[in-house]
Image (cartoon, rainbow, N blue to C red; front, side, top):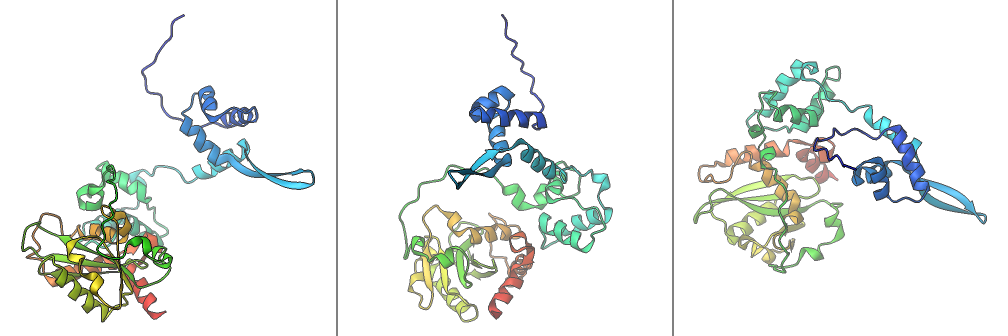
Length: 339
């Protein structure tokens, strides 16, 4: 008996209503997901996702007591699948509003650029509900397929996205109080006035100026200042100057040498992240990434004017943010100061 091994890649298709019925029957027989996947000629992960979609909480009486349990129900899974597919379709470019495409292109190529792809699409839909506007994902598809005048290079953060590399082990190097001792109300962003600090460089050569960035964790509002050199005394003086005008209760820093004297400051709590753990200061790292659109790596900061730096920072602070329900960091920061 010969076996035919086909090398043709099979086109993916969604689970049918009949397959969902079989799944429910197989589960009632006590079959495991791996065996069900084999019987339905499906990938094991497909079965696990389907179980998650169609599992509901049930109740039954045992000896006069209510007992709750979870069970996969094919009918429920099919309803949830059908509901999810209602809004799922690929919008053809010719159906999109021409006025939107023109405005979108201008907004993405503006200098400085305030909107992201997502925030512009959201804002435009609010102002022009009668026009056909594609989703954020569809707009990115258009860009990557070369269907618009916008190129990925016009959106620097898209170009920089890379797969995560293997993380390095964290070491116990601190210049002061560890982030492990930072209170919960700072960690969960429930209180206002707690900041993250970092440095942004141009050229990595001696005598080069640097930019100090401070970002408030709750509102994501940022402050920036150009420093003559990347040195601890300049950083401390800049922080002291900001403390006179802004509510700065705590600052979280990395273990860079320019932050070695931060713990000497009075009237502010200082915390230090683990080495090689930039995710512990993700708010600041994200801001630095946005700033890199205007100040790329490898370019000297000597020619950067204070007016230009202020303009770039204001553009980011004025940017509508999805994490803030499309409100700007500046607006939320101003509101927080009035509470």
